[in-house]
Image (cartoon, rainbow, N blue to C red; front, top):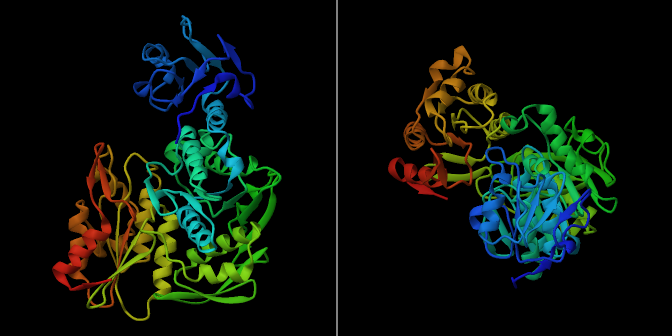
Length: 494
């Protein structure tokens, strides 16, 4: 992208109660939120983070060449030649400033956001694949990766910060994209990362307990998700899963056009599963029968939401269903790897109780005999601890055998996490439950003891290619370790 230079008066439109101390004609060439990355000519945004308050670094930023500061509180001494943009909420203001700096790219794109506890990545990825198949140039912003057509840009957050997000959208526009599909996390709403964006539509998948380490209460979590729909304009659509009892809550105050999807009741887009096997799923959608490559009830909901969003954007039903029938699941979402003697390995990102239950119930429906279901599962460190015993209980109740192991322990002791998980193991399931902290060893143990036709579920990390331990990301890919184990104990085939 070409270098950008904007006077600060052009960046503050849409911001309530803004006061500029100093010249409003000062020109800035970058927006920076990390004072260590300040370059001459930058605008530094002083954000109040969970760990650090950016207001502490305003003088450091000006020492390094920042010519403007966006802040809530002024420093004790105002530097000569520096303009201070004082606002009520720096994070919220940054959304508008970032959008204006990059010429409001979301207004020139068809931008669709997907929110919910589970299914965001699958729905956003399916939409990206679908609209490319329909002939559009598209961008994707997801947990797995950010993508502009075939160009992959590594992803570090479900939703980037407002500056990075607008920069990506501007780049997508520059490269000819007309449609962009993005995951909208609850964090991004609460932290104003999507403030200043114009969405053509929003999709709600479902909501269950998650991220209480950040939101503190389930009610706050719901409000964050709902906040996305509250922001949608009248021109947008709001498509919600009406089978989730909070689906109607999400759109109580939205200005957008409300549409619904369901497997259980009357809705704008109604689906019915006719058959479901390891090779595909046969569905009826709005009275049309279609066969899909993806499987599972959770994917039936995902497909319905994608179908509904496409029609809400003006696409033709027959063309949409034809293209959808050729799509594959995103990496690490019910991804199957088979050994030559037909042990079925399934790697899935399921890291919440609801997601784990959905995957295991899908596996239960796919079983056709006495195959064992061996589940390997852990829980991430420095995250919502309430779900740990629940995850173990669900795994034990819906599996033949369970191996509790380490996920991404981060800064917690892996054994402490496992001890909390063990509290959820039903007494009658103790004999069929093992604890193996080393995830590599746990996967090898499961494969060594599996028989042909058995199903091994490795849950929690999905597409991730690392294990986060004490701030260091060690190379670790569940799929690769599973393949190695198959080669060690059984010949392997895809």
